Image 1: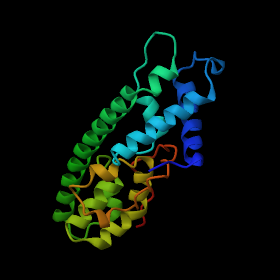
Image 2 (image 1 turned 90 degrees about the vertical axis):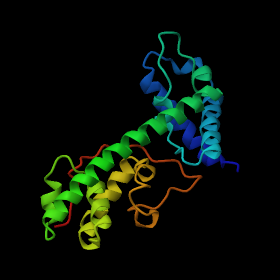
Image 3 (image 1 turned 30 degrees about the vertical axis):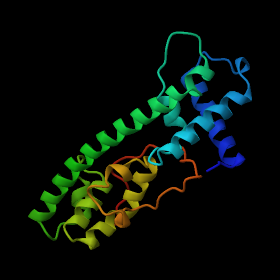
Image 4 (image 1 turned 135 degrees about the horizontal axis):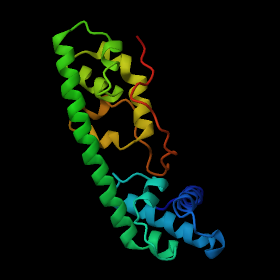
Length: 202
């Protein structure tokens, strides 16, 4: 599968911005446009080899180590080692998110069992619970009405970190996940920090 030029340019632009933010001492005049395109192709190939890896330029750059040596995006971002580091980091994040969701779902399920008429506002007041954790727990306990109260906020949580979809795979059937999958040739959007207390319809 070959990427379109638009996709590569988009990835390259975001990789360049992310690298310049992370390497504040780096001077743009030290490299050519080709290095960012090469890095984008490395990210794209990593995604093709393992479709579970998102096309996330910012996370790809953040997965690379920072050394005290002179900045060199060619060696840091375009070599096979860059893809391997990215894969390791993504898997580490998914494991952490999976453990986080398991704890949340267990806690939310306990609360729902104790009060079958529990309202969404009661659950969201618990700082240890996220909308996605509540959404999953409600579905697992046969409460689609309660899950619906968390659907929009859970989708927002997914957009802030699409890796939640893989992390929740063992907890919820794929067709019930509150966000559709990003297509293979569509780069993940910039991350937006969100609070666990996202808007919940009462």
